[in-house]
Image (tube, rainbow, N blue to C red; front, side, top):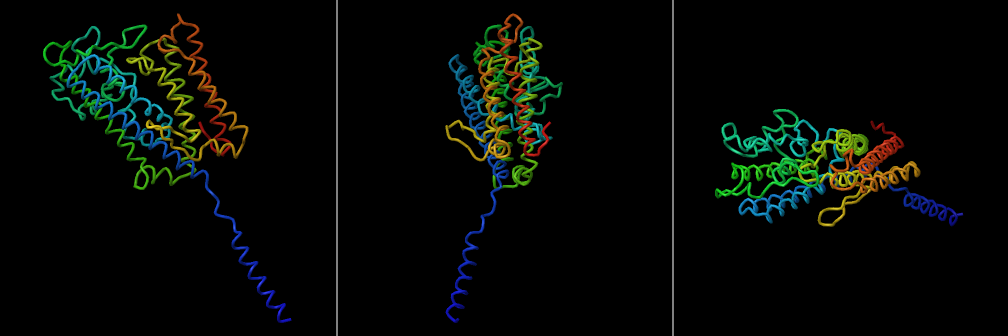
Length: 388
């Protein structure tokens, strides 16, 4: 009996120990992982935007110090490169995050369309703009430029990417190509074209400096480990932030990119309604905008140095809830990729009534974006979120 009793006690202890060892681990909160990965992607995208803007600043400073056609082409190339990461960030908008809060950072960074005559000379008015108004604007600085942004109306844009674009290309007066501002607009030895060449150079550099400052502010709001939007409002509210991730992707696809950037231009046939009219880079903007939508849904961003930021994605969450819905969303994303890629450059030629094939290509891309948005909305609903 004694032996049986001892064995029974031993068996009970072994059973108790075994039960403890077999306890299930704490469940992984995939929604929290999606929110964290999204925040990492946002941070990396803004960091790349700042790096590219700093490269633009360096190229512009070299050009201003010794203006030449080759130098101007170099700055233009740096400008186009600077747009690559930033345009991918636009799917981070439309839910009152840092880019869209009361500080008005988006308006300082990427406002368009702009009235060129608010900044510099235009065809038929050689003395237009802040640059040529020495009386009211004796000093050109970041502060002056920022304080006068959109004070004279929505198109009275004084700063941001498109102000820089105008300063590099000038008005787009060509039906077949971009603007053609001469590099001599920046020569200060008396042989330059137009007037106030030194002030034009000051304005260009100050405008880029302001852009870098504003991008740096956004970076500060998304850095981990400090008190900011990311820690206080975003990762601290997983459910609300997950809904906002869907909301940004949906609204950008269904409203901003498809309607504001494309449908309005198609309906009006006006060159001024395309986003990057001075440089004729609108096609590229649309491709990158769609890429940003894809980045958000797939939870992956390729940095400008080739490294990849990747983690748990919306796609994985949706797939776990409804495999078919995720497959449909992915199909719509890839279909939008194809339809957008089919648009011919330059975009302003595609929207003309004299180019019916081009108009069909643009409308097909717009329709694909709406279909993509509708499926993103459906995907959110599968996770219990109302996206509108």
